[in-house]
Image 1 (cartoon, rainbow, N blue to C red):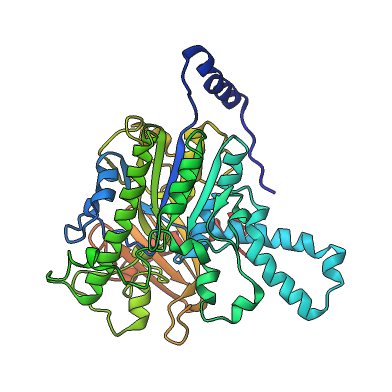
Image 2 (tube, helix red, strand yellow; image 1 turned 90 degrees about the vertical axis):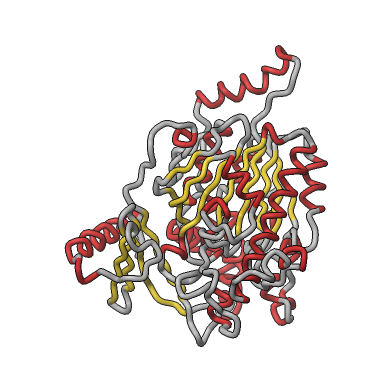
Length: 459
């Protein structure tokens, strides 16, 4: 199991932080952490990213008074593996490797060897549902250092306790639920999916009960994810605009998500906690919905966001803004174009809390946030095994890799023996494939990907 150890220097910092109240007469404690997760939230569709046709005033405020990384990427082109990164700090390839290692270890136990073939298959399936508990998740690390934690929203890992949250909304399912009409909703979060769509009370109750402790909140409502059924109080802003119907519906969902962010921020402020709370925003995967593109009537595009959205290999499928907001503690109005990854979020949080993150693959962005240095990556590399399919709405299995540098986005579809290359300087939307014009770059990028595969033990 992956173990993080606190450095002696960090122990000294913690001792000072906890002893200081004895001398100063007031409480000094580590910051609260609120992780805001957009679900199918395309990177262009925020006011602060230039979309003046989408109302996102609360997210715009976070960006205006915080630090925004506009060229960040998540680690997968769909939600579950991307969310696993936000819990463990690991790339999905590393996560899956670790699950296989743990499963192979468990298969040596007598209880597994005595099962019949059907029982073994069921055991392996259940192992995948509960695999998160074999990892040192962010709530677990923080919990070992005095934090309480809350899960709300999408959660594929069966029960909030599997992520080591101390409180949460998703509480598993029964085997008979797998044959029910609402099975898929139970599978991807169950009761947790009510967050914001139906209620904010569970997260408010958690804050009320734990205002005197450092806390971590996983705020992951399935918005602007389908169904795109925002109430009138959000759709009214778009009903008379020159937009396609699918754009009106999707942008209203973006506004609905934005309102939830504002409500949560306001509640924390009302409790007098905003001065010691670090907010971080990231999406789980990208989405494509230009203002005039009409996807109504095409269930594949309506459910995945245009040809370049979710379950594709284009830049739009992976790209996200990452926003850090902590009023009075980090700079305001800073926009960075460094290539950063969602793997960098946990190291950054741990750095701000005062804990060691050196064994994680990501980098802390704290020094960049506070005005020093630059990103440590020359490029980002990713892998995908699941893609769009007209015959299966959950996608088809295949294999592809991408490499993203500041200047280029390269896609390598291994099984199809197909490659695509796009200039991010002149063709940010990835419309003009120039792979034939740059054979030298193709060889260079394929070599980098193969080196990455060896490093990641990507068999």
